[in-house]
Image (cartoon, rainbow, N blue to C red; front, side, top):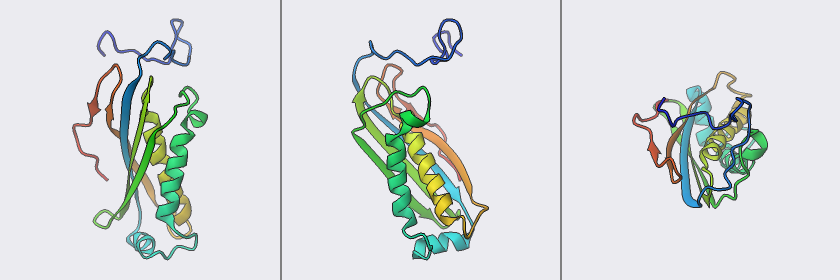
Length: 166
């Protein structure tokens, strides 16, 4: 690690603490995260054809992801509550990998980033997909949940150098 890199949620005594963001400048911030739920081909076909007993899986997963992003500070102990300006959760059926791919984009103007909100959106959407399809496929895998990009803030921009895989 570089000399300025440190775990930000530890105080001078090494105790877990919430980061003080009060003196940070407001900036436009965006984070994009992704992940996939890999399943049997038959399960993906049922989702594509709308044949699940629980209803519209993709619609429910999209709403769940949005709700998850909004509740991140309630789920992750040291996250700050953030006024989110935009949350988009996009889901794509991937027949070549028998997966539902999820991409969440979260935006705000504030003093702290929205990476955790984007990651939470993807995670909650993936869990919802699992919940709605588990009656027909308990062997699904939630995989490759990761931050793809972040913009804004003192640490600058970040973008993954390798594309996510399933």
